[in-house]
Length: 140
Image (spheres, rainbow, N blue to C red):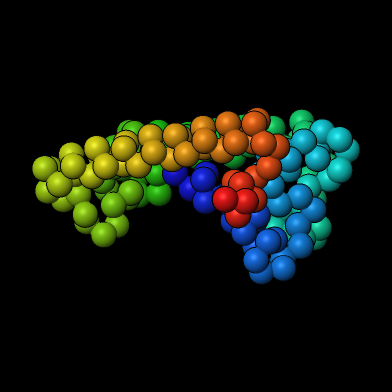
């Protein structure tokens, strides 16, 4: 659900705060790597200087696989197999009441669907105008 915010933030920072990015528009950033231009995360070559598309894919698969393995096997507290909402994922105790937990699960699904719909809007804007969402918004 942070995807829409992550797509807009670099463009907002570049346009209104003067922060320099190699390519602030979200859909052009990945293409830069395919053209041979390395990607610097957080605009710092010392942090992560991605030069290989295959290395990025391998790292993503490794990290996400480790997280899913960790979640499926009980997580940091050695909980029962399969960590789902509640327990370690609910440190504030918001889902202690079963009715509240059911309502929060529905809200989470709805927020995720709204985020996916907004990303679809970003895709369509990029395909039609060739501009990022902030630039399209500023043009109106």
